[in-house]
Image (cartoon, rainbow, N blue to C red):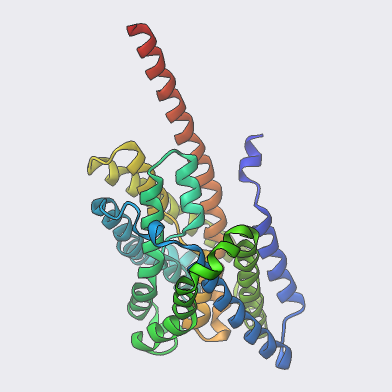
Amino acid sequence: MALMKFRPDNFTLMLVATVLLASFLPATGQVASSFEVLTTAAVALLFFLHGAKLSRQAILAGIMHWRLHLFIVGSTFVVFPLLGWALKPLLTPLVSPELYVGVMFLCVLPSTVQSSIAFVSMARGNIPAAICSASASTLLGVFITPLLVSVFVTAHGASGSFVDAVGKILLQLMLPFALGHLLQRWVGPFIKKHGKLTKVVDQGSILLVVYTAFSAAVVQGIWRQVSVQTLVGLLVISAIILALALLLTTFLSRRLGFSKEDEITAVFCGSKKSLVSGVPMAKVLFASSTVGMMVLPLMLFHQMQLMVCGVLAAKYAKRAQLAEKEQLASAAAGK
């Protein structure tokens, strides 16, 4: 039963299948161009649906808890990049300088929204603050991630300047998001009624981006550059970065005197990286031939963070249940 906690989820299995499909049947020529257009449309639809789904109340909920939000933003956009940069001399020999650029891209991405909130809820943390922080991280990532890419990654395949990168993200990602939010009054009820629609577009758009990215990468010879030994090295790098992020967020949140609920929110929102935001951003920021190399570390890290955080959330929840039982027992004894 313990091993079942670490079983890959269905979406991860679909990601693996998509990479295999692109490896044996890559899209080329006109087919590749058609997939590029379809992928761009799917990503735009994804952000439109998220804009229509996310209420202003959710965005503003818990906004007064500024210390917690600053902590999570700092962990996401300061601690993570510094970790990746500081560990580069130690970890680069495990992969290659080119692939470690993908690790640095992982480090500058925003936090997740859905899974962070789900884990905070499961662990009995501060859910309104988690909604606010995770949503803010995604929105801030539109501006901060391209800036950090220009600092850490621009010499290795990022296309254009910081201004160009922000412009592309605003046009291709945030404009659909804003339109969806403006039309929320009319389309919001339909989207809430058909909740699976967002999940299908979520996963479908990522699978399309992964297929087109790895098709281009296969044509460029990615599997001649990425051996089994390199994949093992990437797993080790992901484990080290995730472990350090979890340890630092836990230690610092306790030193800052956060409550247990706020600590849970800080740990889960401050240690995660978004596949949903990262894959479309990679498509916008990098040349088609390099996108596969950029998102490979993110895909491995994504699965690892889900498995580890799932186990950690269960432990937090069990601790909370024991504390409640002790309180009830103390109250009963005092009567």
